[in-house]
Length: 436
RNA sequence: UCCACCAUAGCUCAACCGGUAGAGCAUCCGGCUGUUAACCGGAGGGUUGUAGGUUCGAGUCCUACUGGUGGAGCCA
Image (cartoon, rainbow, N blue to C red; front, side, top):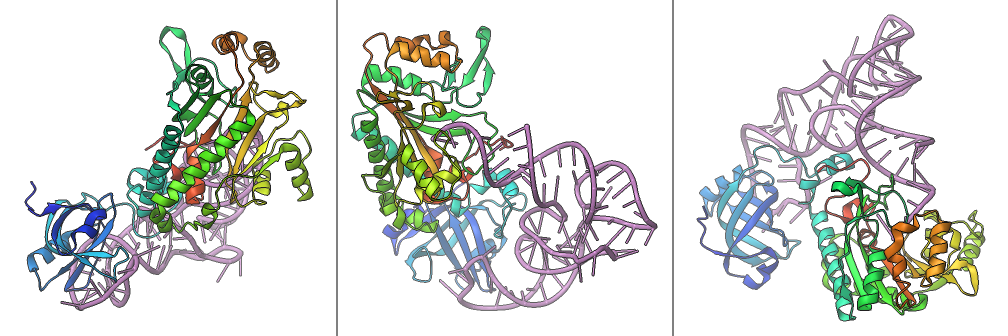
């Protein structure tokens, strides 16, 4: 039953209603009282504002405000006033309150510190906290910017399947589910192979969806379920591919600075390093990367993979994302095109984010010769039969083509400068967590 | 899968060489007309993750288990 008659305004729009009486519909996230004055802090999903209730103004409203507990749902009616004392710039002189619900039990998340186990067990409530509000808003802008980039550049969205047969990069473990009479199906690790098919139909294609890895990874960079954006372009070679990646990433960072600057500020994210994310990005070959790391004292030799510490060792030499290209064939996936000049390396690149955030993109030119592809599938001991349709793509008008996958949560972590990837997604799935 | 660490009040933590459990916040009561994690006074709140063991005595030492955290590998 809504009794208050003032016009509903979202908190983000209060600046347009100074001097007017409006109704704000939200939740109380903090309150203070001082005998004759009550401060109610309310959030409504668009922002935060403080309401002031003076006892001398309305004793009835003051008594109502006294009953309110943290996370009560309320509608407050009051006059909007600009106020320098408020960190939000505006305040509400409250003249009436309608209490929708006072929590049945004490709200678990207090104003003091909590441990990560407790917060993750209460993720459904933790989402209401200011920090999470800002992170999820940045994530929202990132995803919009990604989609916008492709839309602006003539790409077609192709949604790739989440349930697949036994086919993939053969990277890591797969989650399996029962699939009627057909045996096991698997949750996708990548839509790449399907995007390759779509690129032969539509030229420039991309996807953006959930991806699953059953690896028992336990690090601040890994989730078992994460969102990945992949792109695939017919007639692009590895250089075209790298150019596309730097254009995408610089576009996304630029749009986020423009549209979510206040959220980054609230997260105390220093935006100076982000402002430097302009094309062209530095590129170094794997060979050069190994030499650089050796010079810096890393124990690495040609042929070794570049691990987390090594990634940081390389990226700290640059002030923007760096692309490391042409890795040894032995440490990369079966479908990557060998360098025609040097068959021991493949035409690929990893984009490493600055500030120690590591790999945000994995990319390569794909093998377009059917015989070579079959040879590589066998070399990796993969079942050639399962890849029949993928090999077919090379039989009918095969062309050079390239693509990449970009981890959305890794991008969010880097742009927000998060300690851990679990805050970059609303409900993180990690090895020991599926609830809530 | 491997390595390391953690588990004490609702929450975050403390408790020295093994000697019988303590603070802040939260809750409840009282005070305060501009608070910003508000503050001040008072009260209640505990089978120290579980099961064993050593000891006159274990939150503290030992073993196993359970749950969690960080990292390696793998990758986005």
